[in-house]
Image 1 (cartoon, rainbow, N blue to C red):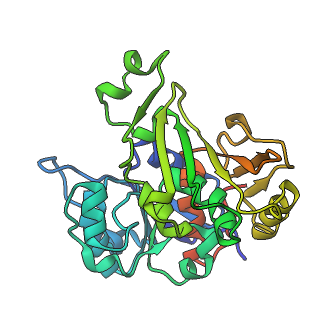
Image 2 (image 1 turned 90 degrees about the vertical axis):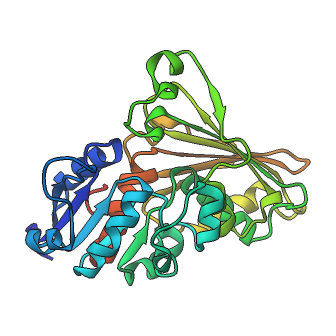
Image 3 (image 1 turned 135 degrees about the vertical axis):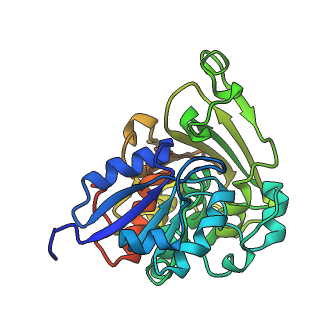
Length: 328
């Protein structure tokens, strides 16, 4: 394959943290040129983005690092113009307008596209993503949670009557670049806070992809005073004595054999945020007590595997490029 940049990807929302990360990744991509597109707010000077923008710029794909309402507005235009779309917002992650209304507390304005959107977690849905024209990038918290939980649930290794508890901590960049009181220096520094207890909008992504009922999964998101990174500590009881630490390790290794961005630690070892900082890896480790209590730790960089890196991974798939291009 030629390494000339013969393909073009529009990046909308390039001023935000995820958009800036996309620009950095695209600079080292051998096959795709990144094109920064200004998404002008209402009342700003200059033409709005339309399908004509796609044609004028010769874009093969558009990466939307925009709020959900902007993604719902722009996606139909770009698809109609013939570009593929990878959306980093939550606009197309859920399957129904009713589910979206419940968890996002807003109305969905592009409901017909919910059925079409491919959920872009490549480790589970690679073949579906390859054929899609619209890919919904997963949320950062559900990326780590599903990668850690789903293989265990599918193997029936978890006692679901006892439930799963996910204690998730994120750096401040996960809240985006738009200024707000809760992410200001004086509020975040030397502080540690929980938010969206029991109704975080990322919960349904875990339920949907790991086949869990709401009462089986307790999730708490917490803000820690660092710039980037997510570390999730997941607690459960094994379903029976056959699921020893060695059995769980083999289960993970089999589930992710050949996956370029999943690293499984030996039993008893767990990752920290330094291990994944500025990478597209998800690192998973665990420890199990003899009585069946098990703790799994999953770590990602929320701006890379949790956002821009995974978006490029999905972009590579829809364009038929090597999946790891620009990311290793």
